[in-house]
Every structure is written in structure tokens, then in C-alpha cells.
Length: 455
Image (tube, rainbow, N blue to C red; front, side):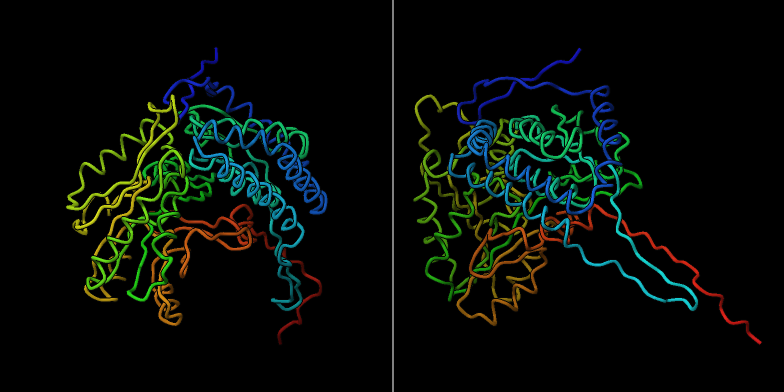
């Protein structure tokens, strides 16, 4: 008999409902149905797949209010954030509807005398997708849309705290794509483990580094695409633009700082350190938890955040206001925070805090700043802030990150790739390059004439 687990409202800390926990029979049934749907889905022409994905994008847009309400319920996001992310998800499905018809032509040619060869890019099969609670709808779109465009079927498992929007997505996918082409399995971490252990052909996982390592070990020889977190460095030179600090404060508190690519570690030259701390503190104090950004997602994340802050040796710890609404005092609210005068090996520097917090480190030189930026295991995103364009571009190129910005942060679009290095994982999200995550090449060589006999 299926059992359920409670769903907690992050804004209040109170139970808001429950969700069904899928176990082995449900996992096997979902994967089996996706396997049965695969041959029909892969056999569609790119034009047919494109039209169906475009229809799914349209259904998301038609029901945008319902999706946004479900996103806010599970994540605690302010309405404006949820609305924007639902629109982004619809745009991603529409982008990959187009991408399904615009793949690079397969290689062909006479590479061996008397023979012609072709390289076909084929779908892998059934993709098991596991997405986190920080961006349930958007991360599902990042993973599912290119997998579907490439001709795979998908079984997606949302985080146990945020199943809401993906159950609606599965309903609309049945209408637009066909039965079991995209299905959802609700449940807990054990549900995710069962999906990874099932007969899926590949796994696409977005989450923590520890969980990603477990997924990789369970996957065996199957393909795995991993996006595992950020801890992004921010190099701020003395000639940074005037709006640098307000821009960084806004980016660091977007989604309550629960984003793999948010700015996390500000690194500035020692000569500029006092001014940097003062200006950043002032910018963070202007942002109100409850008015400008939402709570942390769950009790475990709140406890982890508190542990890292408590373990920090920072001599400066400045916080902004936190004024949740009436009845929300029991939620997982944390104020915007700046930690400064802390050692380079401080837990708040080495670990991804995943909350509305920025650390500030002082560097003796630009070379030292680059070394500090590249001195942690994570390598997902980074930014440089300076009015000197050549210097900024040169430093952005030296940072060990899959994505680097100059005088901005968190600027992303479907057309540009995003992916990590080091303990931030491997693989590509976004852009047409992401199609290759969900395809494999097949070489076909045919003899077209006999080779001349050697004498």
C-alpha cells in the first residue's frame, strides 16, 4: 500500500498537504511505460516532435497561474519569482522544440577508399531525471526539454518537498506529447535511488555533490549528467562600477540564495576591503526577508545554513531585516547576511552555504585574488567587476568556471550553455549543445565499390 509524507509550507513551517511516496512497483511501472513509449516517440520526425513540444510550451503558458501557484506553495518563492521561472520553463520547451529541427548535420564522406560513411546521432532511450527543490519547474525544463527533443522518453523525480508543479507538467505532457513520454514519480530520496537503480538508460541529476557522487556510483556504466552546486567567486576590483554592490546583493538573495550559480564569495583587493565590506553591508541591509525574497525551503536546509554560520570564524557578521508576514513567523526565514574577516579555509568559504549570504575575502594582488577564486573544489560560475574591459575579459577567462560574467551575474538564456567542472559536476545544460547529453553517435560504413587489387 502506498504511503504519503507531509508537505511543509516553507513560509509558515506548517503542514500544507501530503504527497504519495513511490516505491519499486511504481518506479518499475513508470520506467516500463516510458520504455514502451520510446519507439513511437523516437520514430517521430523532428518536425512532429517539435510541434508536440511547442504544444507543451503552450499549455504551460495557458496555465501559467496554476504553475506559479504550485511553485510558490512548494518553494516559498515570492509570486514574481515563480511567475518568471514558469515563463522561463515554457521558453525552454519552445527553444528545444526549435532545436529538435536544427541539429548539426551528421558527418558523412569517403574516409576509406571504396566506402562511404555516415554518423547518426541517436537518442539513448529512457532518461531518469532527478531535480532539486530550489527550481522544481525550471530545472525540470533544463533537463527534460533537451532529452525529449533528442528523441528520448523521460521519467522525472522531483524533490520530496516540491512535487506540485511537476505533477501538473506530467498531466499536460500526456496531452501534448503522448502517454508516458514524460512522466513524474513523487517520493523521497529512496524513490530517487530506485529510479537510478531501475532500467533507465541514463541519469540526469541536479543536486548536491554528495548525492551526485552516490548517483554516479549507482549508475555503473550508464551515462550520467551531473550539475552539483556552485559556491561562485566574485572578483571585485577597485574600479568596479558604482552599481556593483546593489547588483551583487540582489543576485545573492534571489531565491533566498538557493541557487547553484548565485554569487557566494566576494574577493577584493586588500586596499579596497574596508570600502567593499561597508558598501556590501549597506546593500544587503536594504533587502528584507519577507518583502524582497522568500524563506529557505525546508528545515534541513535551514539547519545546515545555521550550522555553517555558527561554525564560521568571521569577525564581522552583519545582517539585514527579516519581517515575515502575519502567521509566517514559524517559517524558514533567514536574513541577508555578510561574513567578513574570516580565514580562507573557513567553512562558509569552502562549503556552498546555499542561502542569502556573501563572504568577503581580501587578496594581496590580482594574482592572489584569482588563486582564492580558484581555490575551492566547486567550479560552476563566477563573475568579475571592473570598468577595465580588457582586464575583466582576461580575468573571466582565467577563472575555473563553466560560466563567467563581467559586470553582471546570473544572466542566462536558453541559447548559451551552462555546466560545471570539478566537484560541480560535468555535462551541459542549455543551448543546442545540451542535445549531445542525451544522444550517442552511431557510425555506418558501406562498401560502395571494390578496392583496387594491389600488385
